[in-house]
Image 1 (cartoon, rainbow, N blue to C red):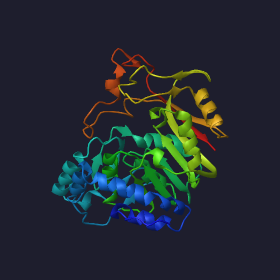
Image 2 (cartoon, helix red, strand yellow):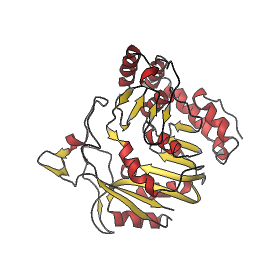
Image 3 (cartoon, one colour):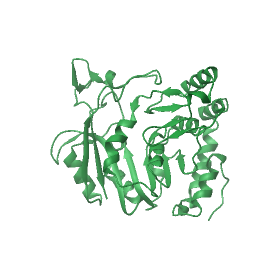
Length: 327
């Protein structure tokens, strides 16, 4: 195996996977992340790392709840002034999209109630106990903690946005679980490991220019018999129904293809998946995706037709999200 400089941010991950089924990843991952860190430390990420150094230390034991929420510490762990300092520092990492979190009595009210999505999918997925789990497009890492709370042995999240990595490190500052990892990578930087028991892809498919290639990439990450949990935007229709926005969808300019459930099942079959099940279909509500003090931009309410909430501002069907499970 080729040896590369080991960035301190990922040293523990390298050490852990050196002796498990992810070890082949070490043939290329250290160089990839070394190049990322060399570049990232010259930009805003360097400022965010400095910010994290000023987070107040907890003064007491840290009770933890990852089973039905992400809650670390208690109200008594920080003084009121320390908690206010924590709030001001974490506010500098806006926007907080996925959550919510409770950190030593500070409630981070993220844009998404990601816990509601987890509650919808958890009854339908395979037991995560002892499994190797990969979350594609993990955002701040909220679901990584829920997967660990559900018993996963090794949880890896990837997301190319440096801000989300900084948010993850802020949470990890108060609870450093050696089995939960965030790698600042994009999907195209993943090798065909065929090593994960469960792969989650939530809110990513419609951002990909080539959805079939993306589904094949997801399949290549799975161990034989592994399970894909796919959550994405869908429209109503049959196997031939696919929406490709003219330019923007719900003010997003990076939405490419939104299929019907039947079309998505066909895509999955053609990509080599079987035992495909639709386990949830949910119209996104203004309570689940909302504007809070923890984001600094638009949210769902700004993206819907003010005279007809069943449509986006562009006139397309309002966001309808499906969760499918496949092997």
